[in-house]
Amino acid sequence: MKFRNISDLTDKDLLETPFEFLIMKLNDICIVSLNRKLKELDLTINQANFLVVINTEESLPQSYISQLLNIRGGSVTKALKRLEEKGFVEINPNPENKSKNIVKITPKGRNATEEFSRAITEIENEIFKDYTSDEQEKLKIMLRDISKKYFELN
Image (cartoon, rainbow, N blue to C red):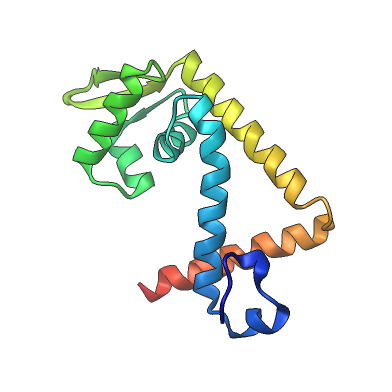
């Protein structure tokens, strides 16, 4: 089977293509699209993921962010320092335990997260304009359920 991208696949090719390959290629395409917007915001996809998590609360313990993103402490510290240097977050010692940090999103970080979320919504609206709300919902449910099954295998 020869092709350059997913859109070149025929229906017959799709039947012979592993699901995992399709998901990986779709992920690659999505990241390229999102990275264009993120570049304007001076963010990487990983930094955007951090901001989305941090933006859910007024402030979060650094250890909780590490747990939510399933990333080790040292890597979280480095990523948060970069976000702090860019003015997206503030990192302060936890008043209850000085050896731990509390991370707070700044107005700049909140604005960037909102712009990033808007960009995702615009992309999704364009991609799914030919699908009904019911079809979109079913796809999301299926992807969630597939994700759960992969998680259970590991």
